[in-house]
Length: 277
Ligand code: GLU
Image (tube, rainbow, N blue to C red):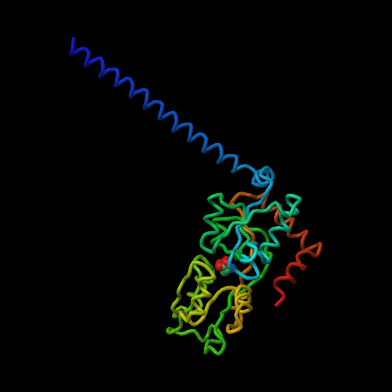
């Protein structure tokens, strides 16, 4: 009697755990199904999703004067990229205020786009063949070129003056960090998380020169008159707006908006407001 009661309890427990396992499996399965569903709706039309959300989440720089800089007095992010994002949003969604801005750095912008944290990147981003493997780009909306920023009176006046003793400051994830190693292979390159940190390091004397796009460097030089941009540009950096791979309709809408802004004078107005150096 005792024995069979034990057996009964054992059998009961076995049956219970079989049911419990089956239930767990079911839950996992339905989670997977859910995941696929969100995936497939994302994989549909990006433009439709954006229109349904009624806003565009833009990845912008927060520390790059002239393009995307957070104004500490009012918390607003200001610059050419930011104004372009608003103007494009106005054309696509009918209202410039239907924007949300999230901070990106050169290193985080592609992962944030591909994670779904942002819908598009407008953040001093050069169109390159390597990046085209990971994201889709709009037409070019600005032409920059890589240059050098130095303290006034520096012996470095162009890329030719860089030697094995030169410490060059650059930012992680930027084309500048790659290009400088090609153009001045003997240089010591120190990489920072963002442009605010790199410029602070230059001011603190941790390097001899900071390298990135001339337009970004002009913004820094305008903040501190002890520094100047030297030499000719030594690369071409055509800026594009990036969207997740496969969002053809969204990229088309961005390109149509860019064409309209060039046509109606708004592009020139914003260019002159920010980039008339
Ligand atoms: N335009 C260059 C790039 O896309 C340098 C500026 C930046 O780091 O955003 O990498």
